[in-house]
Length: 194
Image (cartoon, rainbow, N blue to C red; front, side):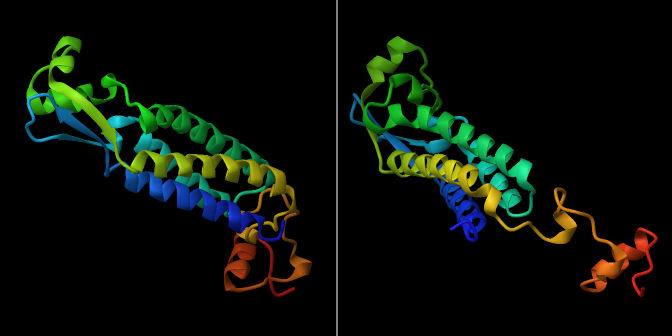
């Protein structure tokens, strides 16, 4: 399992982060008006302000996890777990009973009316779509993937030689592996032909 650990962790973060980014543009909440006029659609990024930035951060952490050494594996997994927890806390209230304050901005933008009393006069109901549930599943995936990464990180194979920071440096008597390594040896002042 540890041989595939890096791949599983990277794919978990990329999948969850990608769906998170997509969900930021989708309709999360539908606001039904008291007067029966056209409903107001609230996108994920309007419902959860940190949705897009934290989803992009999870994507970046997943991509970076594919090349980093042991210490950074733990740090990146901890950062991804923190992002997952923040997004879970922000998303859970939107799944069952979204608060009126979440739709205040989009309602004010559509109607030109703001304030608690105006919201109560305009909003008849707030109905969540499937997107908050999908996103919530993604945040739990981020959390589980982060835990998996921490548990298995020590057994992962090291990244490519040019990305390693925790392994012994390349020495001339090992010989270069390819043209790039030969060029790197020359840059360090080592004759790769020896």
